[in-house]
Length: 105
Image 1 (cartoon, rainbow, N blue to C red):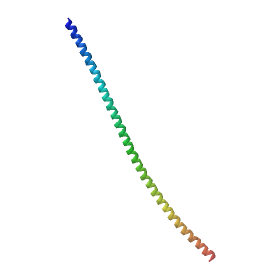
Image 2: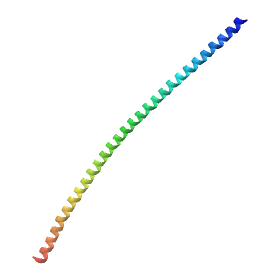
Image 3: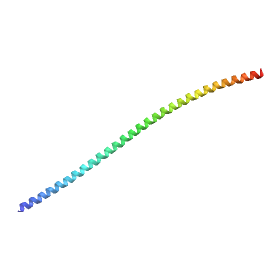
Image 4: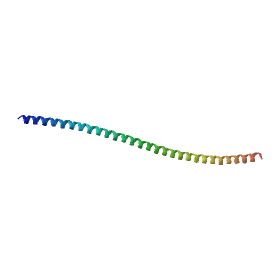
């Protein structure tokens, strides 16, 4: 009977050791999982920042192109207005000269 009691106590001790070892393994696995999760989150942040920077660069490049197009269009319109004004001035000068000639010459 004493042997049975000792075997039960040994089994309990073995079970306690197994449980303690399982707890330690669980804690180690949780710590590794936390570290991996932190790495994943950090990688995601870096990737997100890179994508954001890339998108910002693309947006700036598009704005520059649009700005250049607008400036070019504005310069064309200004040239057309100058040409039209020049034509009008020539016509006005001719009209004034004709009127002056009619009245005073």
